[in-house]
Each structure stands twice: as structure tokens, then as C-alpha cells.
Image (cartoon, rainbow, N blue to C red; front, side):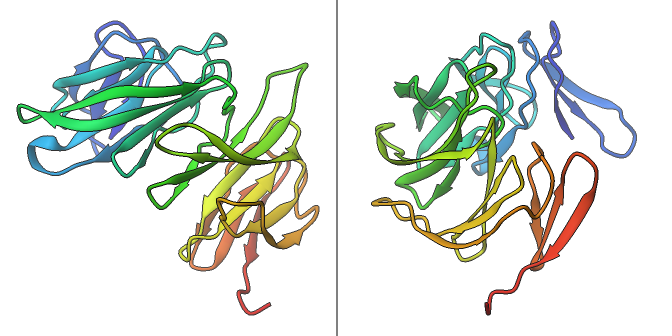
Length: 242
């Protein structure tokens, strides 16, 4: 079990999930709300964290590989790093989003920042790649300038291809379905099914006010959508025939 603890000598900690025993500790970064991702095979397998200080890669044994600075001024980094092809994206609400090219040199994983777009300020919602060339993300702003916007972005350049305004107040969460459609839950309780088209926003279906105000990401399993609003845990059966 990997935890983004955030402490001197224990920024990243690996625990035994059954006993709680600490396997290893690494780095000195401050904490964040982000979860790590794992990818690669053999000697190139790596764990990537968005800590309070940046994107950090270590081996499954805790050996340091690489680091790219990414510091949020509000200390509210909460999005998960995103891999799309050989690019890695990291984002936060005051920093914006950066794209880094992943590579291997002398048998060791490396990453180099290629672009940064300060307008792509992801707040709570993690970007969702569809294929290797495009990523869909919801940008937000902290109070008092709250405004959530859905955007389609080119992975290799960070260029915005289109945007859909007013998809939430602070936040809207995105999920990718098994057939590569997107489910977007707006923070005021509206659900939309979207065809991820890099040329334009294309909405396939919509259900308004399916829940109360929510900032939690929903979960999709076996055709059922689970979500939590400010009072209840709710399950919906999704019907693909309608």
C-alpha cells in the first residue's frame, strides 16, 4: 500500500496492507491530496506521486528516479498524475498543468517537462485521456472566482482545442466508460454522457438533478454508477439501450 504521507524522510511510504508494517520511506516533500499511479515493466516499473512539491518517481523498492517541480500556492494539489502514451500530465489549481515526456536513459526511467499551460487549473477533477493524443479535463478556480470549465487538450502540446463553460461551480468529475465515452457529474448534481470528440463538445445524454451538491468522484462498476452527495450514498443502474 502506497501513501502520500508528506514528512521529512517519509514523504512517500509503502505499508504492508495486512499488517501496517512499513516497508520503506522516501523523500522529504510536503503532503498533498493526490494518489499515486504505477506503470512500466521490469527495471522500468515506476511509482509516480504528485507530492506537495512536485511529480516524483521512485521504484517499487523506493529508489529515486526523477523529479519535476510542481507546487500549488494553496497547498491543495489533489489530482492524480495522468499517463497518455509516453507523456505524463500533472496539474493543480494555482499552477496549471504541465506535460512531461517519459523516456529511459541507461536503463533508468526519466522524464522531461515539455510544456506548461497555466490556464489548465485542475482543482479536484483528475484529467481523463482518451487515446494517446487527447485529454479531457475540468478546470476550476478557488473562491471567490469559482468557475468550472470542461476542456479538450492536445497531450503533446498542452494546446486547448475547445471548451464548454459552466459545467459546475467549483468542480465537475469525469469518468471514462468501457467504450471510451465520458461521464461528467457536475457539482450541482447533473450527469452528462459525452462523446469525446477533439473537434467539438458532443453530449449524448443528460440527467439533471440526480443528486444534491457533490464534490466526490463517482465510481462505475458493472453498469452501476455509485455517487455520494452531501447527504446520501446513491446507486444508479445505467441502461445503454435508452
